[in-house]
Structures are given as structure tokens and as C-alpha cells.
Length: 325
Image 1 (tube, helix red, strand yellow):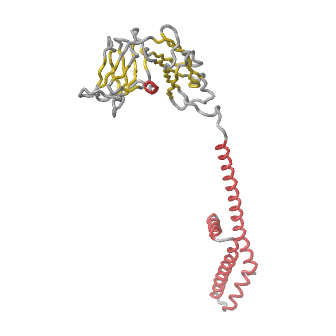
Image 2 (cartoon, helix red, strand yellow):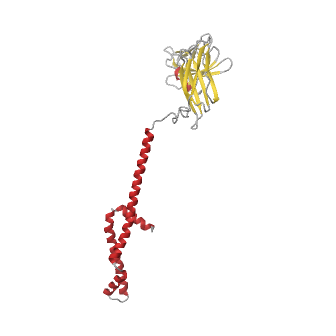
Image 3 (tube, one colour):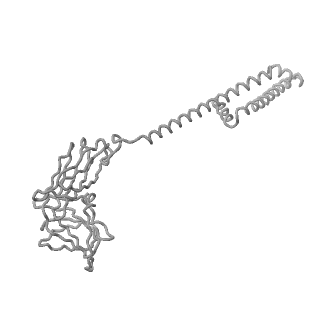
């Protein structure tokens, strides 16, 4: 049965419906003629003469025209079934494609909102509403404007750990504001540094917490003059050497640092004489600076800040691994 249905399906797919009528009639006639011939041959072998054998075969078979019409009707009804099924499936496919195109069009043209869009924190923008704000003042208490604020925010969203850097400059009144950078309802950490000309580098690490961050307050102490001098191996001054202060350890043992990923605003270059002021340390402190000689990689140099305004000479050396965030 299944084999016959499969053959009918293949027949339908190969030829148009109107062609099947003529072909079915021709095939049926040939099959009936073969059957009558075989029946007449059997009768002849039993002793009948040829004419009587054919007559007997016809009488046994019945009305040939009625048999042909009935068989043709059954066969064509099967083709009609496949024809209607084909039309139904085609209509269903057209409807499905139209529905998918409509859904795609709606999704592409639907405006995104803060409630569904992810922020850099890895959480929804509607969740990332936490601000970092605070003030920077000098040792005497007066506000320090144009101070670089370098912040790194760490979050742990469902999609994995995130670390993003943000920068700001203090206003004339010494205040600063970095908006919408952490999710108050989730765990986060913040590393924030303040760096101003002729003042010590200071930073603060705010460990894992939830909720709104309290305003951060920095009071920067004046620093001593400190100059890095860059030379080639032959002693010639090197211009265009990039550097920035990375870390200092104050007298109480507390570390103050700048993360590498947030340092771009405070990167400076040596002048034609190979000199680059680095006025962010106190004499005798253990400090680390990042340097990049022309054509080379970033590398760290650990130094002791000199006394009496001495100059520290640095020359190229093999690159050491970058660390510090």
C-alpha cells in the first residue's frame, strides 16, 4: 500500500493533472488486454478453440468499459488528493513565511528602551543607575578644579565578569560626577583615583557592596618636583617616550594606584631633551611608573623617588609583563 502511494505521489509530481487521465486510460487498457489474453490462453490450453477462448475470457471479465472507468476514477482520485494536499501545504507555507516576515519587521522597527537594553555593566540600563560623585580639595581645603578622576567599576552580571573604566574632570568647585555606571541592586566594586598637577596621586578601593555609593572625598597633598629623563643606550636624549604614574606607597604603607585601563587621560610624553615631569610622589617613596619607548611595549619601572629634585634616568630594556588592571 505504501509503495503504491509513493508511486502515485511521484507520478503526480512529474506530470500535470490533466495528463494523468490519458495516461491512466492507456495503461488500464493495456493491462486489461494482457489479462484477457492470458485468460484466453488458459482456456485454449484446456481444449477450447481460439474464438471460444476469447469469448469466455470476456464473459468472465465483465463489462470492460465499466471496469476501465472505475479504475481510472480511483486512480485519478488519488492524484486529486495529492493535488489538494499540495495546494494546502503551499498555502500554509506562504502564510507561515508572511507571518515570520511580519514578526521580523516588527522586531527590527520596534524602538529599544532602557528597560530592555544592556549597559556596559552587563545589567539592564534600567538597573545601572548608580552614580560616582565626590569632591577633590587641596591640603588647605580649597577646591581643586581640572583634577583627573579615573574610575574602574567591576560587576558580576549573569553573562560574566565586567570591568569598565570611566573618567571625569573636577568642576571649578572641585566636584565631579560620573553617571549610571553600576547597578545599586547588585554587587559591584569600584577603584577610583584622583591625580592633579603638583599633587600626590591618591586612590581608594571600594570593595564588594550593594546599594548607592556614598560621595568620595579626596584631599590631595602637594608633591615634590620629580623628573624622569629618558636616554638611549648611547646616552642620547629620547623624545616621545610615553609614561604615567602607576603606584605609590605612602608612609603608612597604603598603596595608591591607577589602573592601566583607565590611565589614558594622564599619559604624557618626554620633550626633545628627553625630560618628563612626574610631580605626583614624595621623596623616598617606593613608586612604580609605566613607560613605553618608541616602537616598544608598555613596561613597569619600580623606583625610589629621589630627594633634592634629582633626575631619574631611564633607558630601554627588555619588556616586562603589564599588570595593574
